[in-house]
Structures are given as structure tokens and as C-alpha cells.
Length: 310
Ligand code: GLN
View 1 (tube, rainbow, N blue to C red):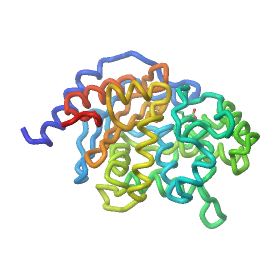
View 2 (view 1 turned 135 degrees about the vertical axis):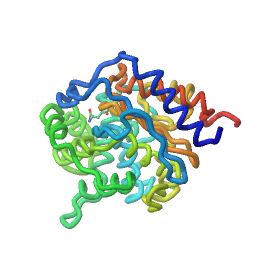
View 3 (view 1 turned 120 degrees about the vertical axis):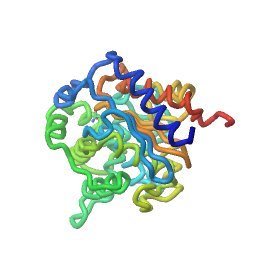
View 4 (view 1 turned 90 degrees about the vertical axis):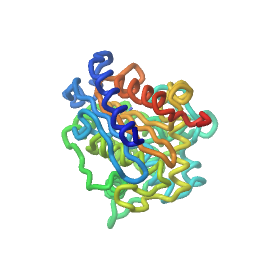
């Protein structure tokens, strides 16, 4: 069997194996997300030659939510460099839930750019000007990672803006600690918009593959960020991308990853592939149940664990 047949077979098998799993529940604290179809389940893998493999609902649109965080972190790092970004947001696993009300003792920085507090600060670091507003930059950057023009799901944006007081609280907390450089209302608004950017599992696999390929989109050939920035982002995804289950994920699955509450999940194999899953039923930490199961099983089946000597 060729390598590409092995990938196609594996995605199909894992889709069939986990499509019947009914555990978990949709996020309903953002009311619009509770309207997603609980049966949707898509898997996609993009290789470094730009080939995409998929199974199930891999072309179904959904919003990025927290899967946007590593890509906006990449934009902030590309704009300001690691030292400047590191003055505002840390790079340590928090061991806490994604929406924890907490800042690092002493520095007042959010622990990392993958938790909500850190993502709001990261979004606020994106350069903003009248000619090129920050959100425009973010949308253009996310689109380059995906290799096509993305847009915002206005209903999901409005739904989160109407219910996002906990995130507003985080923005004000960071502002009071001196670690949010802009107006909290504007920062949170851009953050809600980036969370509502619409993608498919195939888009997310291309985006993850771009990080895996040193910042070059393997489908379009465009260099989106430098190899240094791509490596920095993957490092933070490896240690912090799965919040309070990041250690267990790295132990068992062995890949840098990022989850989101709409049910999207990405993982990257540096110099090898980008992977994505979509299924809206979530576990207690806000990770797609079927996505977690499928990516874990795929890692085992294809021997993808980064710490393993092939
Ligand atoms: N927009 C969501 C929030 O801020 C993203 C959280 C997530 O996907 N874990 O609550």
C-alpha cells in the first residue's frame, strides 16, 4: 500500500469507528454554537506537497473559535518579535481551563497565548492603523494560512458579543495589571470576530500544515510567516494548546495541537503534515470528543508521536 493510500484508509476507518460516538455536548454558553449539527464529523490531513485527504464532513463550515489563537499569535510574533510579545504574554502552561480568570503572579501577564486571557492580549498586540485596522490584518493573515479568502459568521460573532462578559472581565483584568496595551472593549471585539471566522476541516488542515511547513502554505506556496515564528507557535501549541490537558495530550498523542469550542481541532507534524477534525460534541475541557479520539488513534496507527524514534 502506498503512503497516500494508507492515509486515505486511516481517515476513512477512523471516521467510521468514531462517527457513532454520542458522548459530549455542544458549547451553549455561546448560544449560536448550540445550533450546530451534533452529527457532523469531518477529518482532514494535508501533506507537505499540498495534497489533501479527507473523510466525512470535511467541507462543512464552522467557526474557528480558539483554533484561531495560534495563528493570531503567529501574526503578533511576526509583527513584533518574541521578546516584545513576551513582555505582554507568557509561554508557560497554565494547568487551568481556557477561560480561567487568572494572570501570572508578579508579571501580571496571562500565562500563555492559548488561554482566553492571553489570546485577548495577543489580539490587542496586532498593529492597528486607520489604513489597515487590526482586524483586517487578522483576517488577511488567517486567509493566507488557509490559502483562500475567509469571512466572519456574523451570527456567531453577535451571539458571542452578546454573552461574552467573562472575556470582557479578562480584558479589564489584564488592563488593570498593565498587560493590555489597548482599550479593553476594542480588544475583545476583535477577539470575538477572530473566533467567528468561518473555516472547514480542510481549511484547518491547510492552516496546520502551513505551521508544519515552516510558515509556507503547502497548497499556495505563499510564505505566511518565517520558519522561526512557525516553530515558536508550534512550541506553545505543544505545551499549552490543549489547556489543562496539554500534558496528557502530548504524552498520549505527541503532537502540537489546538482545540476550539465549536468542535474544531488541529494538530501538526513538523515537516510532515497538518491535521484537523471537526465535530461539535465537546468534553469537559472544551475539546471535540470525536476529534480527540480520532486524532489520538491516527497518531497511534501512523506512528506520529513526535517523541518516538521512527
Ligand atoms: N470564543 C470562545 C471564548 O472565548 C473561544 C473559546 C474556545 O474555543 N476554547 O470563550
